[in-house]
Amino acid sequence: MKIADINIPEYPLLLAPMEDITDRSFRQICKTFGADLLYTEFVASEALIRNIDKTLKKLAIDAEERPTGIQIYGHRIDAMVEAAKIAEEAKPDLIDINYGCPVKKIANRGAGAGMLRDIPKMIEMTKAIVDAVNLPVTVKTRLGWDSDNLIIDKIAEQLQDTGIKALTVHGRTRTQLYKGTADWSLIGKIKENPNIHIPIIGNGDIKDGPSAKNAFEKYRVDGIMIGRGTIGKPWIFREIKHYLKTGEILPEPNINEKVEIAKLHFKKSLALKEGMKGIYEMRRHFALYFKGLKNFKELRLKLLTSTDENQISDLLDEIKLKYGEPNNS
Ligand SMILES: Cc1cc2nc3c(=O)[nH]c(=O)nc-3n(C[C@H](O)[C@H](O)[C@H](O)COP(=O)(O)O)c2cc1C
Image 1 (spheres, rainbow, N blue to C red):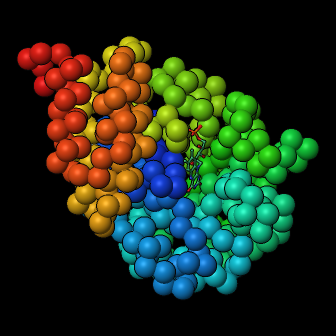
Image 2: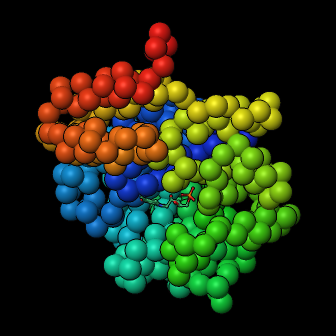
């Protein structure tokens, strides 16, 4: 797959933008397991244009995680254009526009998935951003606002005509939020449109090799984007790649390897985040890395409440000692 001049390997797997998840540390971990294209969490255009320090920090991208796109959202065209220019200065590989966020306070203001209720504005905003920056611009959206307005296959060409270089579609409507199952049939329909020549990336409910293979074969998408399936499981990229190549399901990493991954992730989080954030933001990941361990309650509680990095490191070693396989690190 090629997005503008960015060469991306065959059957690409993309890490979905996720707020409070896809920071630099997590992106770098996913990259080591084979993620082909990564995105920042969404960045508010209104905060960017006001130089809010916390928001500006979200723009930082390291060499080892490229290619990475910065995703922006907002409801005002002027602010989005300005934000895109600010994002461009951070030198991402591309700029992605979020027209999919279903959160009430965002969508009801007309940003994120709210833009699915005003297609002329969506097209105008997209074109204005494409024209304002030199980087490739891509769009991520949903099927439509609700089940009575499944429009993505009808507007895909208009979006393409604005000059965007790829379109990602999450197979749900805004009203579905994250409920039910993703419906990929409209995504497949976009791929059947002979006038569509930009890459179409499918998203929603990919959680293993077989679901990814099915999506590539049945819906003929150019790439697959994975969100929740990566949280606490960044090795999913390795598993899926292996399955696509061999048809075999790779066993998941043993506890020793999981501890090493969690440690590396933690180390990066500490190095890249200020103050206690590097610790707080790892808690959600730790909970999922070690989900399902038997009699883990006490250790888990300590791991998720400790504010001392050395203690957390010791607790991770304790997990290895208690649950890991001997002589196998
Ligand atoms: C915690 C969380 C945060 C998310 N944040 C964003 C975001 O910032 N931008 C975006 O476009 N989508 C966001 N999403 C949606 C995902 O990118 C993705 O479209 C959705 O989770 C469906 O894919 P999945 O079934 O593989 O998780 C978020 C999803 C989750 C679960």
